[in-house]
Image (cartoon, rainbow, N blue to C red; front, side, top):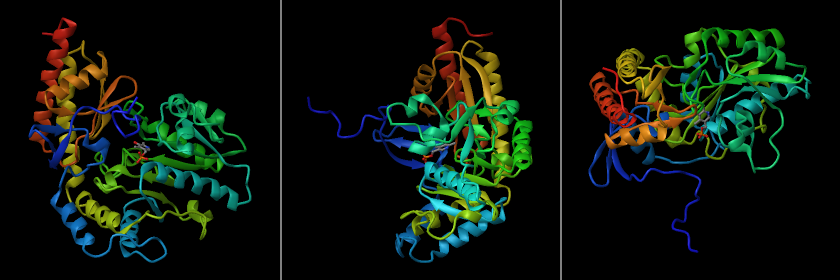
Length: 399
Ligand SMILES: *Cc1c(COP(=O)(O)O)cnc(C)c1O
C-alpha cells in the first residue's frame, strides 16, 4: 500500500495550515485568524514576525550565514557575554536545540567529576514526569517509558525520583552521583511547579555532597515566568543550565550555560557542533535579548500574567465540571481539565485559539511574551466560550 505522506508518522498533527504570522496571530491559508497561545511550544517568545527580529535576521542574511566553529564568531561572544552578565554563568556553549543543550549540560557535569579523577561519578538524579528531549541520553534522563521503549538499552546513569520529594533525592545520592537535573516548572509533564523550598533543598544537597545542580530552563527561561529565568524566583543559582526555545524566538537556537568551575573539564576538543552558534542564530538571539532585557519588559510579562491568572481563576470557579485546577507561573500556564484535554483543545480550536496539550490532562497556555492585556482578555473570552460548550456537553455549568 502506498503511504499517504512521505513524512514519518511520528507527529499527531492538527489539520491546520498556516501561511503567516503577525504578533500573537497566526493566519491560515484560508485567511482565518487564530490567536496563538501555543507560540510554537513556547518558542515564539516575541510572537510572529517581530520587526526587530526580522530586521536582525535579514541584515545577517546579507552578510554571512554559516562559518562553522573553525573561526571566531563575534555574535557568539557578544551573546555569551550578555548571557553571563545577567545570569549565574561564566561560560556558554551554543547548540541548535533544547536536547543538545541538555546533552552539553550532562556532558559538562560528568566531565567535571572526571577531570577531578572521579570517573565513577557519572550518575544523574532526575525526576518523574520530567522531559529533557528526544535524544538517546535525554529520553533516559526524562525516564518516561513511552519515549524509551523500543530504542535499545536505556542509556545508563539516570535515576528518577518523585518530583518535589527532597527526602527521596537525598536517599538516591551515593558515591557515583554527579548531578541533579530538574525543570523548575515541568512543562510536558503538566505544568508542575517545583516549590521554592524544594529548589532550595536541591541546592543545599548539591553543596553538601559536591554535586552539580543542572537546571533545564528550555521552556521556563528567557522571561517566560516574568523573571529572566524561573529559578530566580527561588533565589538560588545552578551550576549548569540548559536554555533553548524562547531564546531563538523561532530560530533554532539553544545554549548550555555553566560556571567557570563547572565547565572546567570541557577542554579543547571535548565537545562540538557544526551549526551551534551559527551567525544567523546569533543575530536572532542577540535581537531577542535586546527586547527581553529592555527596561520594563519583564514587568510587562508579570502584568499580563496577572490578567491571565485572574481570568483563569474566575473560569475555574464558573466551570468546575470542566476545569479542575489552574497551574503554573507567569506566562507558563496550565489548565488541568476534568474533561479530556483532546476535547477541550478541539473546543478552543473551534474558537480560533491555539494551545498545547501536556501530561496529567493539562492544557498548556504559552502565549508570546508580547501579549497585551487586551489580547489576554480576548483569549480568555475564547476560552470561556469553549468552556461553555464543554459544560453544555457535560450537562451542568455552575450558576
Ligand atoms: C522542549 C524541551 C526540551 C527539548 O528541546 P528540543 O529543542 O525539542 O530538543 C528539553 N527540555 C524541556 C524542558 C523542554 O521543554
